[in-house]
Image 1 (cartoon, rainbow, N blue to C red):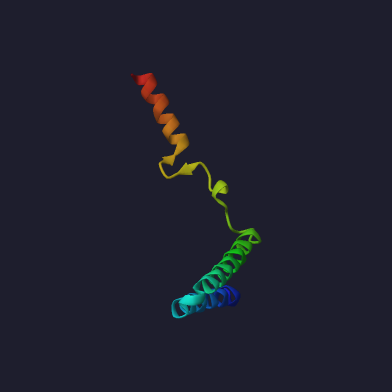
Image 2 (image 1 turned 45 degrees about the horizontal axis):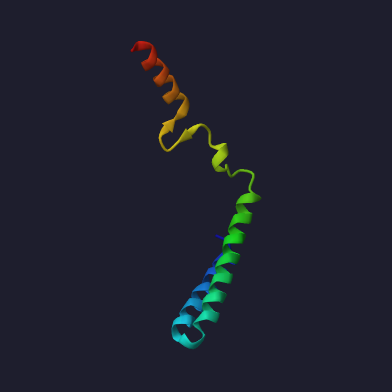
Length: 83
């Protein structure tokens, strides 16, 4: 992770700690923590969007969590013809 993302996470953590120690204004500190968390997420997402080497989920091919869909279709056709 880059220094910017780490810095955002550190400030987020500080805000969350401050929310615990300042219950009267914890809404303010939790809002600030969410803002810093969002900034870290956006920075991380922009790194992946700008990285051409990163393959997105649709570029991964026909495999899914149940296996290769082409293989499954072929096995289904073979079972139909053999039955």
